[in-house]
Amino acid sequence: MNRSGLAVTGAVSTTTVSVLPVFLTGGLAVQISGELGFDPAGLGLVVALYFGVSAFGSLPCGWLVERYGSGPTSRIAVVGAAALMAAVAAFARSYPALVAILLSSAWFNVLGQLSSNLTLARYVPPGRLGLSFGIKQSAIPIATLLSGLAVPTVALTVGWRWAFVIGAVLALSALLVAPRDTPGRGRTAATPGERATGALSVIGVAAGLGAASSSALGIFLVASAVDRGVDAGTAGLTLTLGSVVGLTMRLAHGWAADHRSGGHIAVVAASLVLGAGGLALLAVPGTPALVIGTVLGFGLGWAWPGLLQFAVVRLNPSAPAAATSIVQAGVYGGGFVGPVGFGFLAAQFSYPTAWVVGAVTMLVAAALMVLGRRLLVAHGRARVGAPA
Image (cartoon, rainbow, N blue to C red):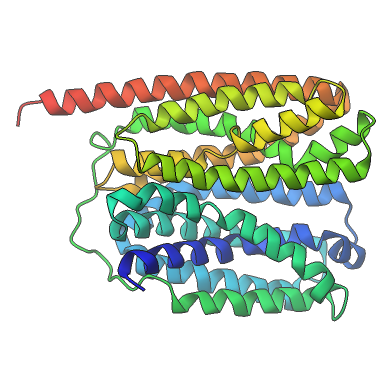
């Protein structure tokens, strides 16, 4: 396998195992809660806090990756995730202990995400970089798949703790394909002015609002559909369809990006607009609206993170990890606020109200994405016209 192929394999492996602790917890929630004694609200709280800690750690982790290189930081992320999955298996004897271990694992998730971004930026040729980010973003569905498989194969046979032990072993196996570059490859990190921090902050806020709306899809879609009278089996199949469409579109976004000369953030904004239409359809009764809204919501409203990361890396080649850390902070913040806000609106008003608010929020995200793009263009022109 050539260097770029190894880079993509290492990035996907690192990203998958770094996020595996929280997805295993979600997938095995029934078995874990039966032993540790917490309800769905407790699960929702720990997931929200997990993304909150991730948002808090994104900027410092971006600095660490730029400072020490993708090789050492990706290996730290992998070993850290493995150690904490082993800790869950051995020491999670109460709900507070489980929360403490999972929140610690959030730091390694962020480190793994950003080190993978730097790996792709350094080793993948420009003509295949977009697709590589699309493949890397498939790590989340892969982690979800592994967590789902762990229920019948491990949790229901030998116990949920062994699923975390196996997860720790899988994580350590990712060291075989982790990047091997040395600390400080001679690159000088960009200053905040070179990195267009203001424009990236606007884009980060836009990404956070988009993520806040989109994150509700996987969590509340089935419950919302059943509440509106749709058969539970049909709702579950619709969620599966949306997940497949979302994964396919993430790869398609990456492939198409490699065949465009620019305009990637504009495509993200357009995807958010169409995704908002999908969320609005979820407020409409009936199975056809549910299916079309799910396809638009997953396929466009929640398939853009890899494309956005690719665009930010292309615009900030001197410090890709630090630049994407700004955007990732917004995405993680949205992952924290979105489920909590949506659940509150659904409980206090109704699911249709929550979906409409989500659609409006996604439209605001699209508008801010356009504004951030304009600020980036203006920043680039100012740098070109600046005296040497």
